[in-house]
Image 1 (tube, rainbow, N blue to C red):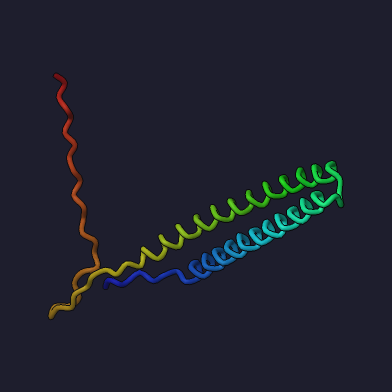
Image 2 (image 1 turned 135 degrees about the vertical axis):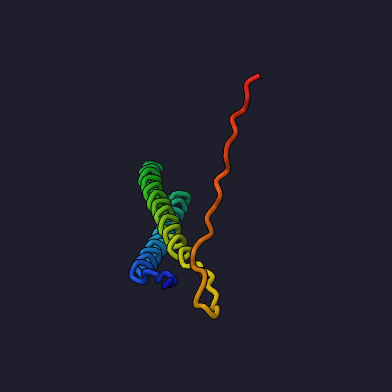
Amino acid sequence: MTQEKKMNEELFSKLHKELTIAGELIRARQEEKQSLLDEFDSECKRFFFGKISEKSLASSVKKTNKELKRLDSEIRNNISRTRHVTNKTAGLVSAQAPKSFRATLSGINGGEKAKKHKKKHTKKKKR
């Protein structure tokens, strides 16, 4: 007797959880990046109004650029991780495509995939 393939719900749940975590990490890093940019912008204003020295601002530039690079790297890694999890999820879901069955007087027919015919490759003749 042929049956439909059941979805591995435990795996699907795990992938859903991973996707949620990666999305939250991306959002958190973006918020962290925005606060860093806002903080640096306020330091630039303080320099403009003469509250801090140029040397102090240069130090802040170096520190800010290093932190921005780290945050961008983390965001990219989490995007990559999300893409990987999404591909796995799509594969799991697409395996659930319905197989066609047909009820007849003699029983149930179908469920088998039609076999694909392989093309024969002809060799090109040298001239």
